[in-house]
Every structure is written in C-alpha cells, then in structure tokens.
Image 1: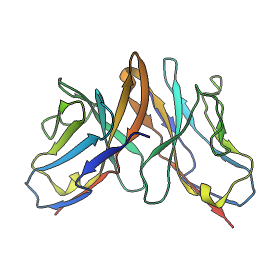
Image 2: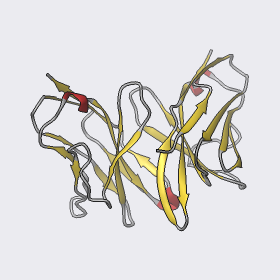
Image 3: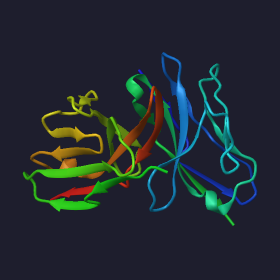
Image 4: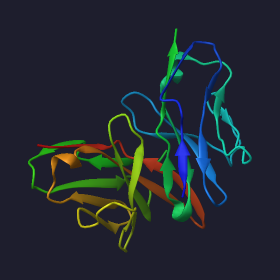
Length: 108
Length: 118
C-alpha cells in the first residue's frame, strides 16, 4: 500500500539557516512525488514536483529511490517560508496521498 | 493559475441533517475531482475520486451512503454528508485536476469547507 511519512511535525530554524524537511514514501510502482505548501489562511498549493527537477523559491527536492525519500531542502531559510509543508505521492488512478505535514517556522 | 472554489466556506448544522458542499473549477474543465477530509493538525485524507458523468470511487473505509458525491458537469462536484453526526465535523477540501489532452495536468485545491455538527 502507498504511504507517505513526514516524521517532523514542527521544524524551527533561524532566518538564513539551512532547512531540510524529510519525506519518505512506500509505493510498489514508479512514484511521482510532490511537495505542497499551505501558507497561513491560504489554500494548499503546489510547490514542486520531482519530475520537473526545478527549484521553486529556492527549494529543491531530489527523489532517492534507494532510500525511498523525497526530502525538501533550502540552503537559506527566509521568514516568508514559514508555512505547512506536505509531501504527496501520486499513485494509481492519479490519486494523491499526503503525508501528515511539517510546520516550518523560520525565526527572525 | 486555475481556481477552484468551494461553497460554503463553513457550515454549522444539527445532528441528523444533511449538508451539501459544492466544489467548482472556475476557469477550466475538470474531468476528475477529489474530495479530502482533514482533521485538526492532521494530513489530508483522500475520501473519494469524483469522475464526471460516472460514479465516484471511494477509498477504503469511507461510507458511500454517508458521503454522497455527484459530478454532474465538468466544473461542478458536490459532496453531501447525509444524516450528519458530530464525528463528521471536519475540514473538507476538494481538488480538481486539469486535463490537458492526453497529459495529466496539475491538481488545484479549493479553500476548504469547515463543517461543524452540533
């Protein structure tokens, strides 16, 4: 069965510090992984997807099939990065399965 | 980007009544919409996949007779919580996937509907 695990519920860092939000998955097929972000009082929105191999707002994520991970990284956190981050896997029939989310708090 | 709306944004109802939540894709056609439920400080849990013109497919453990889904047009899906009980109180979120020819488009989320059952 498919599962997405985000082990950290809360991650607090100071502005300018590196950030890594962890995500591990289990899926029998070829996974498509995504990171979604939800800023305060806003709806969920796509941050990045692994197939694009792009950097959005300074964030990157590499799919590691050996470790079944898709950790989200940013070298220098900004206060405006404070939000809830959800890792998601697209499985069969285009269904999305979400991790429990990590709240990132970037302190000034 | 594409916009998905939900109505109402919040609703309070008495136990035993039914509540309908609408999900609309405002500027694109969505052959598939998804309904999620989110408990406080927890993740989104996929409830069902709504396909235009056909029956919804429900995830394991989700009662289809309890959560009625109708996807009558390419821009509208509705979720009706029938005979609501306090344990149905939750945040319900829909998403719509844009179909771009043969490729799978991005999934766009609605703002959610807060349901409180007294």
